[in-house]
Image (cartoon, rainbow, N blue to C red):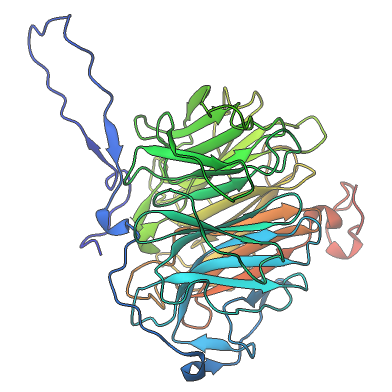
Length: 492
């Protein structure tokens, strides 16, 4: 654990010495751009504690609860076989997959700590066959094997993939053909810390390809792909600007985009590969844009002292309307001024070449010193942009956080009022021998609504929850105002 808690960019240290010499010859070789070194070293996903086996028969359990706020119900996922909460464990950093052919079939993966007495984590996994009303946790994927950074995604036919990082800083991908009820053997996928997996569902030449990006902790080659549905992965290649702490997306035309904090510039790097969808071609990157999102990614402070406070999210608009092929970028960033963290958004209407001036999604007054952390984004098939984050605004001077939601129906030009989705929780409870509640949440927007996987401490310990939101359009047709009893239950 790092002995001090720092906010980026203090944590992200530029390793360069700029030497100015009088009369330096103009013919001297150009200075290489300074590369950012990720830090602190304590963030690296390595086992510090031994594995402590906790047999199912020895687990202490207590009745699990369904937590409801404003009609929004959070259902615990990491539960015992009888549906009880497992006392004394920890679960965080969830990722989610929803079967597009049957949205009632859902899977969530997470970092599972069988006991808070050890920070040894494994690949937790749960599945639901009834739209998230109930969950089954059949046990971790590899008992006794260190695994972290779970990332789930799915293809258009409903095959699920689970990307998992091991202590050797390599990634392994599991495949499920039954919506997460069972998983096949792990396939080596190369990789490194803070990886992300993106599956092409564009219907184009690359449909079914798996694209993986990661942060350059161990290697400078930070991208690869599988063109055979996860049976094998190609050798990694370098990415311009080496974006880190971010995700990927596939545009409607099959172009692949990766976003993350830029390694050689100030801002969020967005890089594009137009030919990664071509199985016969070696992927290359034909566009690099560094976006000013009004602040930098942050971490190791406040509500999450030993982890990130969010990552960079990029998503493509696959709707059939005028915003088709727009790109959206969002992150919790450390802005100028007294606020420690805000959720900022920007959009591109020209396939990532240029980006709009960032806007602030959280609607609390500026200068309230609230933390809006773990900003997360997904886009619905009709183009609606959905955003969640943890928000401390209702605990002035404290860190108790509430899961909060906002949406945009006009490609990010305007945003809804912010809505609280959860009870407040203390993110400093239940630490499993590390001072964090993971590094991210995850969400998926589809025609049925918004599927959210998040972690909270309602039970006094870290647990993973599933929450489903109906599409906000169901309750708004553009004419009613005032009391919600007169709102329409049909789409406009």
